[in-house]
Amino acid sequence: MVRHVADAVGVMYLGRLVEVAPKAELFARPRHPYTRMLLDAIPDIRMSGRSRTPVQGEVPNPLNPPSGCSFHPRCPHANERCRSERPQQLSLHGVRIACHAVEEGRI
Image (cartoon, rainbow, N blue to C red; front, side, top):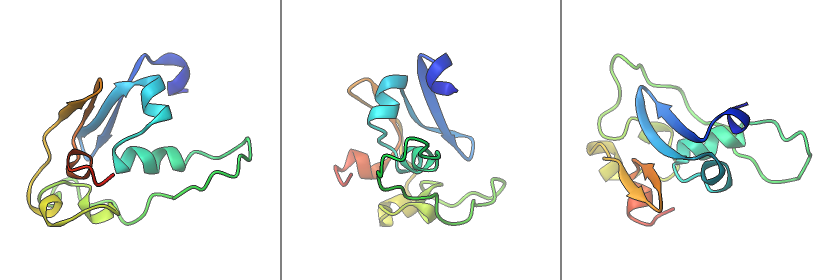
């Protein structure tokens, strides 16, 4: 539905924007690990055979979110910096993203 009605898409995790991008860019090249997991969770009705990774782990308590990046307990790319320092949004080719792994070139 979002693909058909939006010009830009914002992805939130525990009340914080983690990625904002033009819709074509977001669906073609999702950058944040949570955005990737969300898109992988969409049923593949075309049966394309593309590998999909379901969203892993438990959602943290939003009243007491984890330190650092709130997605780090569920993120396959998390490191010590993710556990201790909240990522700030950076602009990368017209996409705003808050992710240390993207900033550091790990994904």
